[in-house]
Length: 292
Image (cartoon, rainbow, N blue to C red; front, side, top):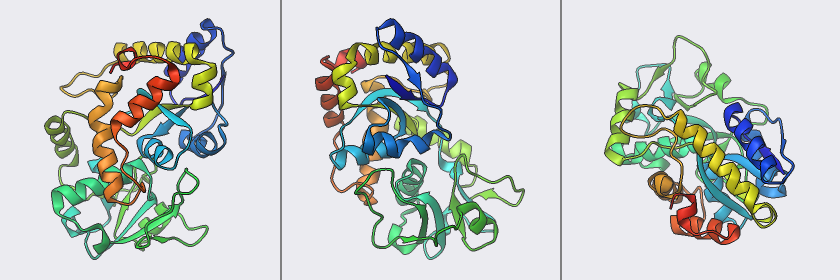
């Protein structure tokens, strides 16, 4: 049973659980972890894979045989990811240029959602540039979004001043000129999560339909083992950074799905109940078995 997980602690737990369940675990070494998404979604090159929320939503919307296993592998606040070099702020995005790695990148989906809700931004009033396509075959950027020339890189264009804003998470360059476009971004992010009751989750776990049919016992065992690790390392605070279970992930997925539809990231609405039903039917369990 092939799997991709970015966190070593979760991977170790999964290896043990899968092996004890009678399957042969094989961890694929793919870094950064998002590079595994395309092969997983389109070619089933792994049975279980860490993927972004937006990738799950796009995969389901485009009819890919991908199922949500409700484990958060990367939860973080996102308001700090909109950055600039000058005196502009988040309220100034309209009429300016913004770069994001991919239109379907989950960090971008969250940040654009914040800009629309909190700042009243009509996304079409900004000049958007993307640098990569989607992980999901068949998904395309909106007509009002342009693609950077081949070989161009978001950090380079941003630092050179060819972009007014950049949306960058882990790929943020180390440069003292960079400042967050949202004032007091971390405090704003924490308050947003308190108000919403959840964090803007980034990465979760997914499995293929074929794996669910062949390795359901091993997948459920891996879920239990990863849940135990995350429960043991739960961060203090009013809102968990790494929610586990269908109930705990409902808020984040529902909000992200709404943002994704508004932004033309997905071609149709994806209701959270659809994700729950697909996973439970394939694995042969009730929602309660996976924290529903």
